[in-house]
Length: 236
Ligand SMILES: NC(=O)c1ccc[n+]([C@@H]2O[C@H](COP(=O)([O-])OP(=O)(O)OC[C@H]3O[C@@H](n4cnc5c(N)ncnc54)[C@H](OP(=O)(O)O)[C@@H]3O)[C@@H](O)[C@H]2O)c1
Image (cartoon, rainbow, N blue to C red):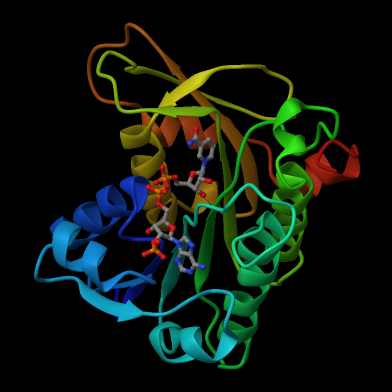
């Protein structure tokens, strides 16, 4: 891409994989996070680190300025109130990033890492600071932003090997499935270069088996656009 790609949460476990993959593709990568210590520990020297906090809109304006794409992979706290609450990190923070992008003439592709189950308010995960409600609100802000976007809803994240058979699903119907962080990072990166991954929301799970490379183009091509899905009321 001609301009930098921002990875918000790029010092985290998924974010680091995204950052390294983008750098390997020759992209300029701006990593946004709060901890300089994590940046020193986890980021390769080619990554440009910006100490910023999505809860403070003034801090994200400069690192997001002029970016061609953004990957948002921020982990919330689990208390209903307080500085790390899901509301502040999964909804307000997303809105701050979108506002910063909208303040410029650019229309970057926004990839949001969300979570399976967001449309199930009675799911046990929603007991943690209404995490699912705020994730869905963040998703809706992205879908309503007018920017090109991809919303990715992983199941439970794992770093264990062997989860090589990947499935993309829609409709938020499945339950309790794991997915490898590596596949989630792959999806974030591949989505930036795949027209079929624009304007879609999908769940991810992976299971044992599945030797060989993931057929990303085929998987993305099988997805329905949110225009179609929203018309059926299946997202919210
Ligand atoms: N764990 C699961 O099973 C699961 C399931 C579904 C979805 N997810 C989601 O998948 C995503 C990636 O997960 P992960 O395991 O890679 O998370 P992680 O390792 O905990 O990384 C989270 C990242 O978020 C950054 N961050 C947190 N608060 C921030 C703030 N206020 N401003 C800027 N950056 C902030 C952290 O950096 P600093 O601390 O330096 O700010 C870190 O880089 C997260 O959104 C997570 O909620 C997780």
